[in-house]
Image (tube, rainbow, N blue to C red; front, side, top):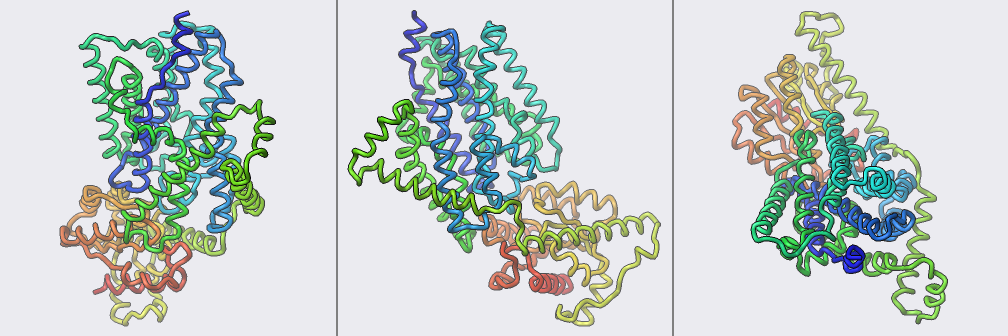
Amino acid sequence: MNNKKRLENRRYITGFDGIRTIAVVGVILYHLFPNIMRGGYLGVPIFFAVSGYLITDLLRQEWLQNETIDVKGFYIRRMKRLYPGLIAMLVGASAYIVFFQRDLLNNLRSVVASSVLYYNNWWQIFRGFSYFDRFTTQSPFTHIWSLAVEAQNYLIWPLLFIVLKKYVKHSGKIFGLIMALAVGSGILMAALYTPGADPTRVYYGTDTRLFSILMGSGLAFVWPSFRLKEEIPIKAKKLLNGVGIASLAVLLISFLFLADHFAFVYYGGMFIVSIFATLLVAVTAHPGADLNRWLTNPIFSWFGKRSYGIYLYQFPVMIFYEAKIKNLSDHVLLHSLIEIALILGISELSYRFIEKPLGKFYYQYTWFAIKDFFRKPWVAVPKITALISVVLSCFALFALAVAPSNEVTAQQEQLQKNIAANKKKADQRKAEEKAKNEGKTTDSTKQSTVAPQANLDLTAEEIKKAQEMEITAFGDSVILDATAGLQEIFPKMIVDGEVGRQLYTSTPTIEKLDKEKLLKNNVLVGLGTNGSFTEAQFDEFMTAIGSKRNVYWINVRVPTRRWQNEVNGMLETMKKKYKNLVVLDWYNYSNEHEEWFYDDRVHPNVEGQVKYSSFIAKQVLK
């Protein structure tokens, strides 16, 4: 009887809105200011821990009251909570794409299907998409992966809960089993992670991310909200408050410093963060502690209730808005504030007119609702909302009908073929140089001395000097795009390029090149296209190159990305620090010449490659 009374009067834990606020703010700032909020992505495991606890706590209460679980009712409640906002976002984004950003139509049907059916994380994994490729990742639906992980848990968890309650019964033993599964998931993340490689597989995988949800679920068995007492000893209250404050502090510090490329994140770091998130949930849930009160205020309440919508709309707003801005880097803060305002505004509309009404709607009364709908005045809010929804749905269906699958534009195909051919040529040149270093020189390793094309605007003296110069080019896809032209001018050039390469992953490769005697006394660097870097990362890279080598660093032209000016500013600062560093100002040389670039406005086209190669040659040969 007492248990039933508690169920009837169960409290809404307002502090959870505060936790959700912290999590969603971390995620948004991570996407807007990745060099400041380096670990903001850790807001996701916080969401997972809260979700796992709340869902399992409610299932426990239902089991105590009825000694069974209404699985169908559980699924309906979850669908009412998740689907209205998700469908609204997919419809609105699809309608926008078909009119204003048709380049995103490619594979739209697959994206929508995988989102609605909640297998988007695995769809992205099997398609080879990267969450961490800041340059090429343009989908407004990238973030749906985390909703898929949660939904897959919702599908299985109530059934597993029933099995555990029927056959294991004891809450302590169930907690132990759940924690063992969580540890297994964490170990799997560490086992599947490859240092230096793209970690998207372990970042997206349900099997490697489930530990955060499992920790929250396990907590509900040993820390059920309906058994926690408000009146507790002073020492216990101080202990709880201390644990809560310490956990919150660890999470905030992790947001600021635990960057997504650190190997520690995947070798237990995210698991540890999830433990602290679970401790924060535990203390906030306890009515005897003060943390619930401290995390309760009107602002947190507003953000917390709308956190699902804010998370849903963040990526579409960022992708759509930034695609229309010509020079994003020139006013990063202003554009970021506009994006935040748009995200919050759209989320409020979604919450007020879609998520909240449909979340409370009882579908067994649909017929009565329809009759009541038609009795309302024509200018009533429900009719206006319905009209807008119907119009957008028609546009979205049209978008799905015309969306191509796996389409590659002529420019994209040309760029991909060019990079692939140049990569092959660069690898062949490296192999020849290694053979030469090992004393295995053959006729095939002799360098070509064919004069470069005349339109490079180089003097005979510069051409002769270039053909004798030993130089190593190291960079990303922009360097690969221009490899043929560069090696035509510098026939002895060694090129090491990788699509999507970041500076912070490059030091081991530089050390390997040095060990293999492929790192010449002149080093041409083209990094920064895919993201910015810290001074410490730059120092580590330059130390690996060594102070006796001449370093020529090409600055970046990435007008559609927020880090362009940050990278170029860092390079200007670093050239004052390193006497052997020369910055080649490709940005100012090329910025007014859109005709030199492919549609991505970053990779030089056929004409641009000539300009790029001759510009670099002129600067290096000074």
